[in-house]
Image 1 (cartoon, one colour):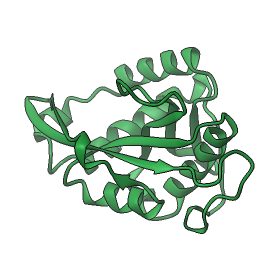
Image 2: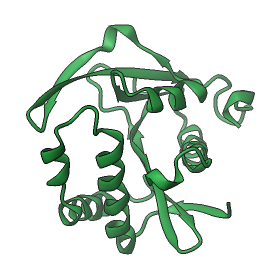
Image 3: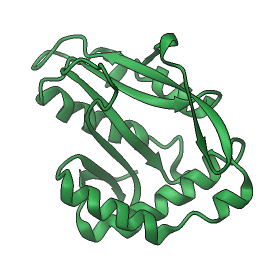
Length: 183
């Protein structure tokens, strides 16, 4: 697959929103009510992503297969209360379901990791819904480990869900080699 990963532009936001909604509708169908997933609005998500691109330039990357956006990753400093100042966070990473298991997610992760490392972060965290086995396999395959003391609950679409924080220590610091399982 020929793919390019690059910073998102305002013009990309509708396509990003389409990937976002479609991936939620497939990935979370076992976690959230079908009627809630059916009401997800591409237009509302596009507005959110336009605001994000404006507010956080360079922190949203897209993967393009030919002319189409097939995935995205958003990242920045950790938003967790009490997190070390040298911890980044993957805020969001989604791939179009028809492109799952094709390497798109890995390419997005590696591009984000490169920027995270260049910014001097020593670790990266992310949150995943407990029981989301596909996502957990992906994250643990790239070196993330669960932080068992971080379990929390939140409500979305009238459903209470549990999530778990995963953390990756960036082993070699800036300019060092990324461990082999990440490349």
